[in-house]
Amino acid sequence: MNIDPGLLDILVCPQCRSTLFVDDDRSELVCNACALAYPVRDDIPVMLIDEARPVG
Image (cartoon, rainbow, N blue to C red; front, side, top):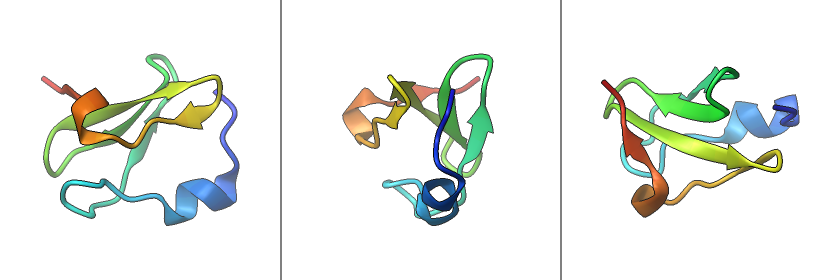
């Protein structure tokens, strides 16, 4: 997964506005606050709540 570090600095969870963490193994951005994982497809984060999967 190759996402611009500047982009990662400004991205937040669209549901709760918390910081996201990178999960390189699953190609996801994870929000620990609301337990959602947003997919990254072709190095582009898909920041749609409907596309997120529950973590856990």
